[in-house]
Image (cartoon, rainbow, N blue to C red; front, side):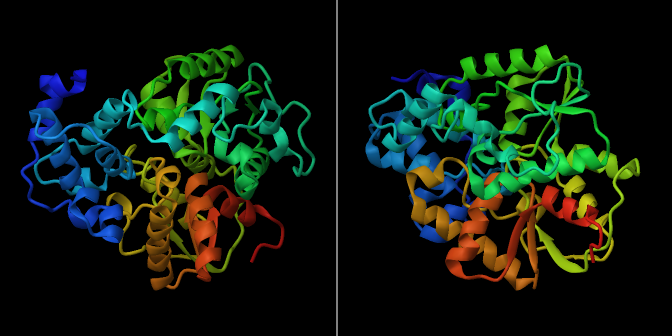
Length: 382
């Protein structure tokens, strides 16, 4: 039997659930599918059955566990304090060592192991997002002694749909005269593998060594998943880790960003890994409200109760239609408040919701908060 299943501490977490069902309506996959096994309570019931020997591990159990999007909404909703994220992460570690590990995630893991990124691209392609930079700094990559190092993450650096996030971040940092650099030998932070229940020690060791060698005082990243890994799993002691919104909020407070008016109605989507996983709720909203002329409106599901975009937890690799259905629900919530722009602070959220807006023909512009800020820095912004 797997070590997790016989571990008393893990068993206590599983059996703490009282089956009240208050988690059901908070779960994005249950809200779409409507089946008990695709809800937190059902997934915990399966883990109980594995622990007690009433069910063997199977392909069906694996499928229901890996359709958990990892959004942690159930943890917020639970009145009994069940640590659902740890339960489901442990479940994935159990399955990852078995024959029932999803083949699609296994293929993704192989790409990361072979190329050190989730896209399976050559390392040189991590720099393609810089090609359209206006007046590209000659010392953008690997400058030792810079005050700030930018960790790009795989999605922004390798998926053209969201190249604009890093391009805008560079523009904003340069406007504020920040002394920054971008790592020249970056690997995947490991989050997709970690979320799947796999070991990421080699990735962590490489990235830590490369960033420490640069001597920066602060690491920033636009990716909440990278942010979670650096802040909680890497936990460096020689430099601070901040999400880009936290750092940019400091620049605004210091008066280093001369923001001009943008007369538009904006709502904000809380990324699960930035919000529920790291409790960063206020700084993105402070940035949006700092832009003159912006009318900020909240969606009904916001902050700790925000609805997931559908792009987390490797769900897109396991069940693409379910991922799309979750994204459609979130977009409809933005449309319901009459927002012209749906802003997030996560490249995967922008990518998932942006593709959904085009697919569903919902007239909401999806963009990252760095892009909104750069727009407000342009001459003639109105």
